[in-house]
Picture 1 (cartoon, rainbow, N blue to C red):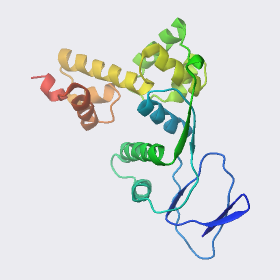
Picture 2 (cartoon, helix red, strand yellow):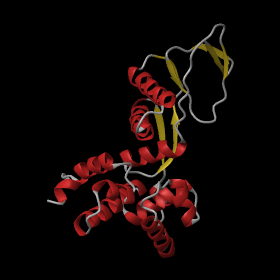
Picture 3 (cartoon, one colour):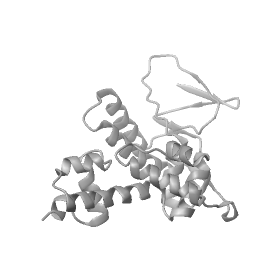
Length: 226
């Protein structure tokens, strides 16, 4: 299998990485099996922002050819299996694998451009009010950066940067905190089954809520009711 870029022809083996908007041409002479994994700009930027604790202007993957990277190969194989099987919890499982893959790519194959401090800003008081009310009323739903940015009327990049400046944490971290707080109140003040508490607070399932509680509170939902 060959790929031509900028008039050069290079043989690709095992796995390769191609950044966004990069043109390329491919040619093969016999049957092959190829798995494509597309990592969205929002996912990569969000994880990069979280691990670096800085506002990201751009993330570009270095062009990787002829690479035998067992971590990338294993991640792609795992995502491919889940796409084919659609087993229980596939979406949550793929999200976890994708996160690990992005961190690995950032460590080894990425060039990151950061915003200068002077470009930072904050959400206005009205935007903060709209956003907090929106999140509070929809904690049980899947909240995306695109949706939250639309609530404030700004682009995703601007929203992510301004949110951190206004709240002191990433949108994901804030939403997790709100879900934990609501779950703690429901566990303490109601007889609602733990499984139902997990659902109304936006956790994937009871096991997911338990993992989050163990990570952030060093306890479990069941222990809070003892």
